Amino acid sequence: MPEYVEFQLEGKCVRLPIIEGTAGEKAIDISTLREQTGYITLDSGYGNTGSCESDITFIDGEQGILRYRGIPIEELAEKSSFVETAYLLMFGHLPTGTELHQFSKLLTENELIHEDMKYHFEGFPSNAHPMAILSSMINASGCFQPQMLAAHSRRTFDLHAARLVSQVRTIAAFAYRKSHGLPIIYPKPIYKYSANFLHMMFSEPYCDYELKPEVVRALDLIFILHADHEQNCSTSTVRMVASSRASLFAGAAAGVCALWGPLHGGANQAVLEMLKKIYEDGDDGTKFIAAAKDKKSKNRLMGFGHRVYKNYDPRARIIKQRCHELLDALKIDDPLLEIALNLEKAALTDPYFVERKLYPNVDFYSGIIMQAIGIPVEMFTVIFAIGRMPGWIANYRETIEDRNSRIYRPRQIYQGSPLRHYVPIADRETK
Ligand code: CMC
Image (cartoon, rainbow, N blue to C red; front, side, top):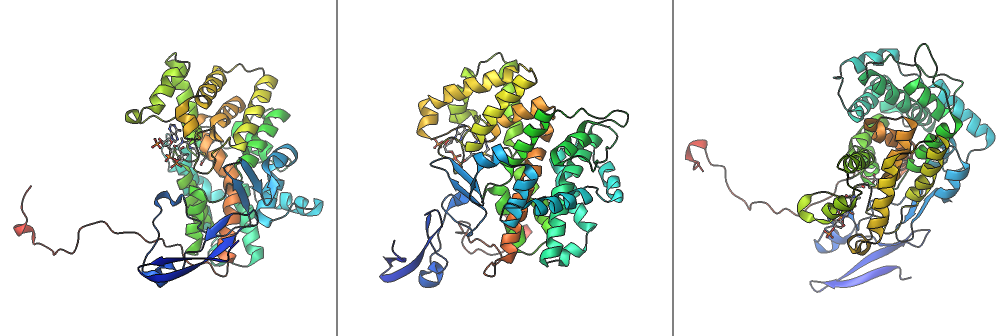
């Protein structure tokens, strides 16, 4: 492979270095292009732009490969737990037994939010979307840990990172309970990560929620599959915030906001709403597919397509399989699964979807599992956010620890009015 690329621009020879990643991905480092030529590159939606070099997650979208710190997602889904996967992402290696024990202990010790934070929940209207509550409360929780604003020692960072991983599920469960007028349920130290979340969501003060192992395991799997996905919209947002050296809590709160949109994490809610609508309309999916192909209709087949995957999203394959297993175990006959299977079958043989390489993504089947677990639809994207926290933390840390990291500051090509001068209001023409 050549070490640099050379080309002529306006009679000048331009030389740019070539970078190669450990999995053979190649990039042209254009960081001196403007200095050499006066030109910048333009890449709407950053589809062809690498914003950083990273050690965390690898995706090969053409082949449908996803690895966290080098380990295939299929192996983690089968053998790991969410807490172990979180450790892997945040610290770069699988923990030893002692490391895992210490990390789990740290999560347990930090599962309670500051008691005064409970009053903040009161201020939200009862119909507030839990993603709005989650983002606000993560930012608010930073105010209860002001040391974080100045904390850049590894030890303090690790402590705050563990707090965030642990408390995001407490905040999420409290948000759900408050928005339904239900009493808050405190975490129980005897429960592991996912079981504790289910307990805080569904127990009552007078009766503990019955924890079924297959349900706990399914939720843990959902968290694992969402734990990181390299430079997507929300992770890039977190890195953007980190690059300005705002706190980890500010970065995570911003990540939640970016994740909320229906083209990103909000797609899991949008998929279930789409499936319900298809069901209520008595459609088997045929009419909806036709509408999704019609550019005038603005409908999209939610849970389909991906910027990076031009093949089956490996997470969707794992979730689809677990979806069947969980519904069988719980003896649930969900007509929405039938519709989803029909939609997938139709889309995968339809030239519109085939030509554009549109396959099911992680959100296509995750809503059906979450519904079977009993999670309300408005909490789906919150579940995604809980799972994504270790990935955001790993990316935040990588940004602030990179000695060459500069504040993220893209350029633009201005297409507005050329120079014109201020006109006093009395002299302006009325339109
Ligand atoms: N249904 C119908 N047409 C689609 C879809 C879809 N779901 N996705 C893409 N297309 C078409 C799009 O109209 C365009 O067609 P044309 O070339 O004729 O203009 C072509 O496929 C390329 O689409 P794009 O919007 O340029 O692709 P993108 O890389 O900018 O967007 C996406 C990726 C995920 C936003 C998009 O596929 C989409 O909106 N999917 C539905 C929402 C969704 O499921 N989002 C979750 C993504 S995975 C999890 C996550 O990131 O959080």
